[in-house]
Image (cartoon, rainbow, N blue to C red):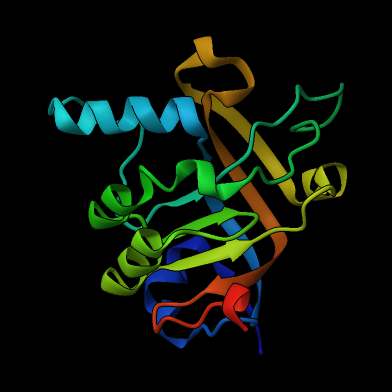
Amino acid sequence: MEYVLNTSQLREYAPKLMAGDRVVLSGTVYTSRDAAHKRIVNAIENGEKLPYDLTDAVVYYAGPTPAPEGLAIGSCGPTTSSRMDVFAPLLLDKGLVAMVGKGERNREVCDAIIRNKAVYLCAIGGAGALASKCIKKCEVIAYEDLGCESVKRLVFDSFPLTVAIDCSGGNIFER
């Protein structure tokens, strides 16, 4: 199946999405990688304010390059998701609805996806320049000192993705 969705619809649609389905996603997405995830988890543990509300949020594991003149963003392909596996269950338990990246996830992440009725979506690796054409806005919102790994608020416009792990336990990596 193919779904054309806004990020605000993901919580509602997550139970309907099955591993292998295609999702064309638009709406607000936040970039975050290893270093930013570590800071976000430390903020949660210390009761500090987070850079964005995790409730029904979508995280894209990416470290975009600077925007060429006239564009919203430079190359913005997915990074290997397993590097965030140590952090993902807590973020899912705190409200995250979807993660976008590439590659397999560990059992704890899969269990957290199921427990929280969330979804893991894969983007095509190696196609960052093409992916950037589906991003209409980019602004750094936290941890600017991390450079390309800072937390950014993106606006996706018809970003093509594949459901890799669904909230029923379907997993394209186990087929």
